[in-house]
Image 1 (cartoon, rainbow, N blue to C red):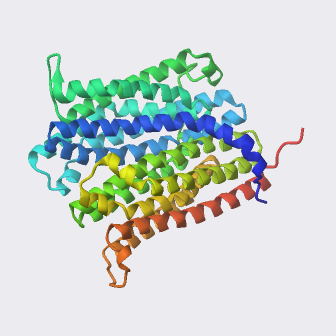
Image 2 (image 1 turned 90 degrees about the vertical axis):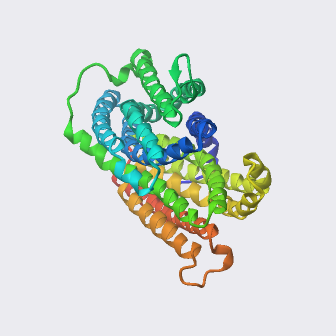
Image 3 (image 1 turned 45 degrees about the vertical axis):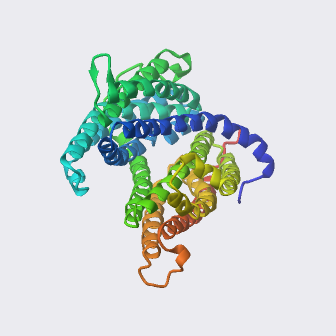
Length: 463
């Protein structure tokens, strides 16, 4: 039975917005980091900007994959929070920290040995050296980043995302002066150019971690979780449970990132104008994506808490309420994007030829909002049920197969029968839209079947 009632929206939507609002602000603050790095490095030199672009692409791929694994703590701790098994949350946090430290070692090895990856791009020796330095510096901050991800998962699970948002905003306030100091130099410190961004980021990462740890240590709210009451050696069973759920999540994140990365690489073959137009639309799409992402994380929290409280019907109701509300919100955003496409393009102030090239792409970014909302909401709901393996396969088949594969066939008109409108960059964006629609269909079906099966096997307690 499909547990969804429009009357429930009045109860569910405020709860979703209460959690999603701080999450959205925090996500936008993190995006602002990248904007500041790009803008300030571009003023230093084109070579440093090229090094930043290459090193950032490598780092983001590594970072997203590793932090995705650790994010498995959120639905697990969320279920425990809903079940009021508070002391077990502390044990899960300790074991997630062990997992994070192990993944940190792997990540540092990759970041400090990225020579072969950088060689693929045939960069000049100067740019390659700057990119290596950037990655080596970021490796110093990776332990703090991974522990911070554990703490973020904890706060999402116990419905306290505002704490993380405040700390992220503090970091954003530090980013500009630290970038100025380490990129351009001052107070006796020599300017480093692009790698200076990495120094600023590392300082902020460690500051974030220490501030959040201090908050968890001294705030009374966290005492029932007993996080610091004792030392726990690695519990391989608990770590395996985290890894079993987290590895597919991390790989799903990696699929999403690489699908857009390769999409950009293929579109680059079409020329500078095509790549510039694509980058503008992709950047706008990233900002818009933060809305359904924030709502989906909030949904996962509420659904996992309901599952932990042994309220399977309520969990499904919240899930469908979020599907309806998130999709309606994103449709509204998509319409607004199309209506105000010229004004949005003016914000980027591109050359006339890039502007003309970008306009048709706005049709796709407006259109696929419905599919993006459906697929991401369903995926995060399934994570609340601790299901991530099948969604990973769905993402691989749709985003890599239909999105990249289909986009390549259409974009380059491989078989010679593709309509003109669907050739070039349009073909890749059309393939991406189709892939999201396909993923949405499979993920929503999987959510419905999972919820039905869960309710049959976990009937609510009768008191």
